[in-house]
Image 1: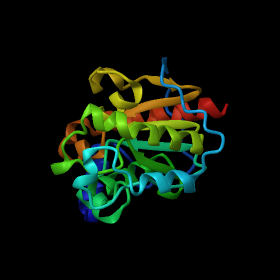
Image 2: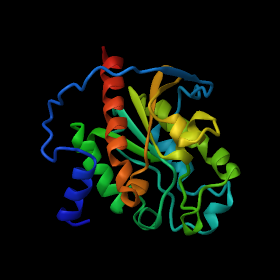
Image 3: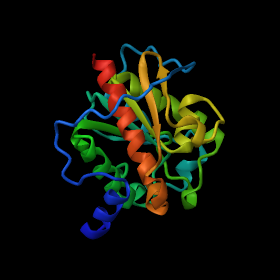
Length: 229
């Protein structure tokens, strides 16, 4: 993504490109809380090394037959913020890292807009292998891979989880509600608040919803500040 295109996206979202690290607190917003019956696993002996050793050669579903490699996740393993997407795309499948294409560049700018760098957060996906032709993962594929994600969440212990897009939100929150009804609220995964935002890949295609995405990010920031007290 060239700089002119990046600036166009940010301007469409109403984001000041030079947002300072000391973010100005937006106007008062109501933050409804919805609990999620989706307990994190109790695995006191789990380690990052053990989990990654399980994920890398995984053959539990048919996605293993078409992937180049698994995409485990990346970032700060002790992060306050955890971002969760749907699954790897072509660039991610080739590089073994999440969000490295144009959607990843936009995600990086979205993080910067709320005073974060990619090194500050942990980024993962619901499924660790690329679905063929970037189709949605099936319920079976999600159910098979989701325990890996829950173990990652248990290891990171984030103060907030930001879910990117409909598929990831429905999978993590155990719901069939459309994205339009999931946005604008906070949920609770055990004691961890969860906020749903648009997927960056969707925002690249839909300029009109970028201001809504900025509102989602502000909600996430308020929720995080409230969690920290």
